[in-house]
Image 1 (cartoon, helix red, strand yellow):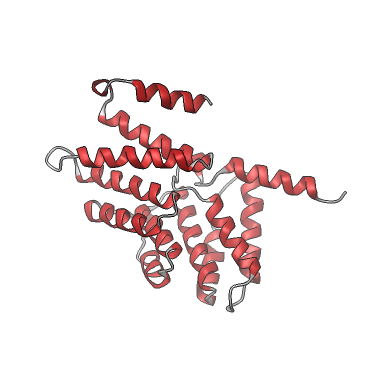
Image 2 (tube, one colour; image 1 turned 30 degrees about the vertical axis):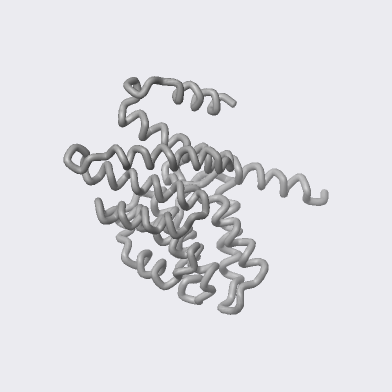
Length: 237
């Protein structure tokens, strides 16, 4: 409710009172809110906001990095709405404007979700993870896990396990969930997709949000805690 009121109040401001920086931050806030609260309507508002900013952007005035960030955010919104093809296009434009290892991570995940496994794998293999901060390395591990649970190729499964094991986090809820993912990957075998692996893939896509700095490790902590508590309550004494 507080966030909805804030959105309403910002929307009422005259256009001359809204700076370009402020409008971009507003779009980021809408996209994050849409992801965290599972509010597609907020993601749509974010999409519309960033599209306006892209339309207003002038190559002679704004830097390539700024425009690249706009297209990265556009891709985040499209992927949040499960429009994988449109997300792929936006991420590629972003990379053309300004190279970014983190944008490649998100491009790979969209490619995988669009069933373009070979291209997703090539993008992930091209990433220099030494240029990523810890949150970005987490998102890279998840992207490899999405590839692995989709392909069920032995090499992908081993690499995804290794990437997840190397993730650093002190949040107990996340550690518990990460360990469960690793176990599921260890039990997975190169074979037709099973119900368990489908469940893991849904879990990976559910928890990862396209904002690597959110809570520092790129996942929806509140949603994990809710699910963890729900499982605990349903366990027999």
